[in-house]
Length: 370
Image (tube, rainbow, N blue to C red; front, side, top):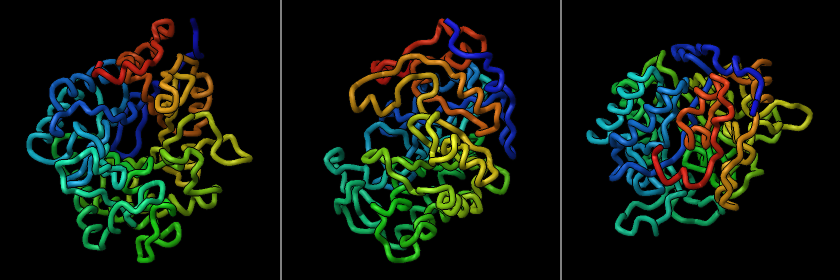
């Protein structure tokens, strides 16, 4: 069955600063929880190597937590600190590079998404700008300025370690209601100091993180920044309700040192604002002039959140409209999530026109590192 027109635009080389990729396909970061005690093992290295062997241009790892006791929200999420975990990541990098791929870690703090009941033996409370959960419940004290400075340095150290052990770029996770996004969102950020207030004030923490990361990795190492409008408790949430507001939001982040923006949406084909067909990545590229990654149900007919709502996976669908958008220059790179999680050879099959071999996504795929 022929699903899409020739996918040539997906397989054109990309060059953005010092990041040079053989094609436009990015493996989207997806939490897997297969790293006991935070240490990625040979199975994790093999998981990423298989995607590199099959033609993924850039792999962005699952979220890896920075060195802070309250950073993870789940057990067996990989750490990005400590000798053993970093040795595990160095092995992942070697495997991906041997297979001809490029790889970036996503560095992450979950903020108040951490639930005390999941960590009964830990005294590390969840943290956030105002100590509020995504539903507005007070779960901890607001962060102090000193604590914020410590968090900034933990992000910077993780980025420095990423460069040291051979990664090709680093992605800062500023999306989906986690710590950095909690500073962005007025629902979770009620601060009245320099880290709160208006939209620009609410970007200050992220700006300081980006600036510290840039200082740690030098002027040429690629920094990717992932952000989203939607939140897990509100898929219709907007940090920016208009293109003008989005420009005000993105400008400080861009000026702080971001090279590539990763604009997270649930469905890549949906327009971000009325009166234009551009999606969030398209608007981001237009407003910042910097490369943008799009994401959201690529190759499948339902968004990933349907897993939590109904247990549905996703049936195969064509990518004709995606190809057309790349040809128009709406965005530069395409992040693929569940289709690649389910099928390590997805990129190679698309490249070779083996569409009849593509596999539907099922929930069972979450249970293994295939």
